[in-house]
Structures are given as structure tokens and as C-alpha cells.
Length: 330
Image (tube, rainbow, N blue to C red; front, side):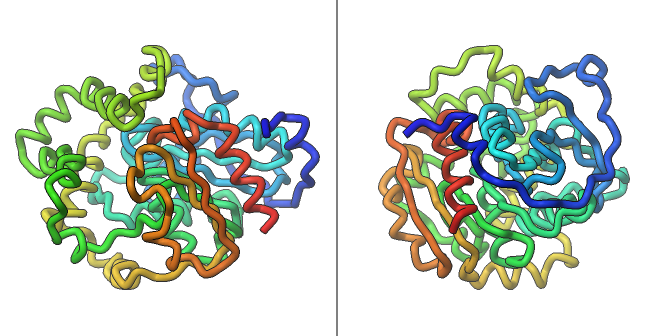
């Protein structure tokens, strides 16, 4: 089944409050290019968030969250499909990416899982969005899972690539078999100062390598990569990435104001909202979803995409958009 703009457009729309936004700097001034019609900026929480928006302002809200080392362009083909179906599509740069900036130089450059999720809640508040379908992959899937778990009233439905990714620091201290550990080589590299320096110096080459290893069958060109790589020039990018992975290994502390949220997350909360999980070749033996099926108690389905790597929305945009539309009907 192939999704077409006309087919998706048969869906209705729902009203939402108008956003209070101001235009972002021009692409030329930012030194980046984009295939989205325009970028916007809005103060939300501790951030000035850069985001793309597509579709009618009164459409059903959908928030699409990217991961590392990717950016909003993972959704450059998903967004117009959903916009044509009548959805209001919001695609934000996470902290440390693109035109998103911290409002204060004194704010701790924290990338623990709950802090990133709080950013999205703050963005929803700033845009006047009470509840939205939230979808993502990699860091974005983890963040979407957390929103669904901790703030189910803000999450109408969930699409999560690789399923249930909420982090437990205690579990992360447990060793894995050598073959599994090999796949996380970069996390150990990032735990060293050599790794931080190497990522600072070679971030474009580093992230291109991750793209190739995480999606070995995806034949992306240099222009596609460079469009995203510009977002890694964010002044906080290296600090955010390094803190994220060091925090996961209990090598860096978070902030005490998130302690209660983290305690709740470490308990592995069950997600009650309607959910579709997606697996791809990247998930290996876990692609069947059996390991996390009991973490979803609402209406649920799981699908496996063959021949697709980690960047599911950019490699298989129609399949990803279809999942968003279908979960909206649950």
C-alpha cells in the first residue's frame, strides 16, 4: 500500500490554539540549507527552540522528534505527507542541534533523558498544544516514550522506532555479551577526553560513519548528509552529545531538579496511550518487539520494516507516515 498525499488528505482536522512564534534567521544567515518551507523560533523553557512547521494551524498536532546524529531533515519527506492529510506537523531541533539555543549561558548543558522530554513539554506549552501525537526514533523515540509514560494526557498516541527505550541507569551498568558491546563502541569512546576531543574535531566524519553503519543499505548522497550535518555546528552540540552518553553510563551527573522524574523512569513505567512500535534491520534479534511488548497496555501494534536501517522516517517515509495516521485512529 502506497500512501499518497490525496489519500492521506481524506482525514479530518481538529482545532488547536494558534502558535506564538517569530521567524527564524534566514537560511543564508544561519549558513544552512533546508527543504522545509521555513523555520521558526520560539522561547520554550530554557531554550529558544528552532523548528519546522507544516500543515494547517488548526490541524491535529503531530510532533516528530529526531535522534543522534540526525536532525529535523529525517522528517523532510514525512512532514508533507502528514500536512497533506490535515495534520499540524511540528519538527523541533533538540537541544544542541540546529538553531535551537539555550537562553542563558549559565544553564547546565544537560542531556539526561528527562531534561530532553521536559523540553518538548515546554515547547507544546509555548505553542498552545495541549495534546499531540508524538513520534520519533533514537533519542526521539526515547523522548516520545517518556512523554507518553509521564504525561499521558499530553500524548494522544505514540509511534516509537525500536520500541521502549526508557533508560535505567542501573540496568545500563550491567555488561552485555561482547558482540552486543561492540555495537556501542562510540559510547565508550565518548567516555574519554580523547573521545570528546575527537568528536569535536571530526564530528562530520564521525557522524557520517554512524549513518553508514546504522543504515548500511541506505544510499544517501553527500548533499543529503551535509543538509543535516550543518545542525552539528550548534555551539552546544558536542557538550550535549557527550553528556548524554556519559550520563547513560553513570559517568556524568544530571540535575537534581529532574531526580523525581528519573526515579519514576527507572521503574520502567508502562505506557498506556495507543502505540505503534516499528523495528528495522537495525534492531537485529530484537526486531520482533517481544522484549518490550508488555510495556504497552493500550491499543498496540508492532511492525517490522525489512531492508531499512536506523533512520526509519528518512529511509521509509511513507511507512512512518502511515503509522502516524493509523495510530491516530486507535
